[in-house]
Length: 82
Image 1 (cartoon, rainbow, N blue to C red):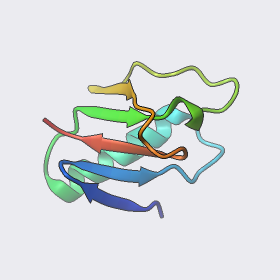
Image 2 (image 1 turned 120 degrees about the vertical axis):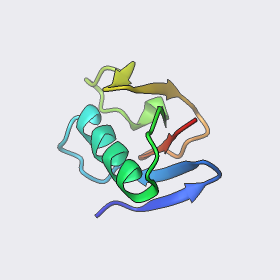
Image 3 (image 1 turned 120 degrees about the horizontal axis):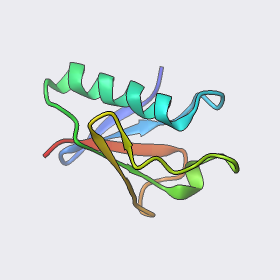
């Protein structure tokens, strides 16, 4: 089970599954966010250092735009809606 915490209008999510691709991790976090808060997620912020060496930075996962944010803790993402 991943850690989830609300920060303002965003949820902080721990990326603990080291084997899954980043797109799958983001999709899991988005589904949790939408189920728990009843709102559609529209953005995800990710520190580039959270990616594996051979992993490309995703521009979007489904309808969720993925943005670079160096303020996000390494190994975490933030999910939010507008």
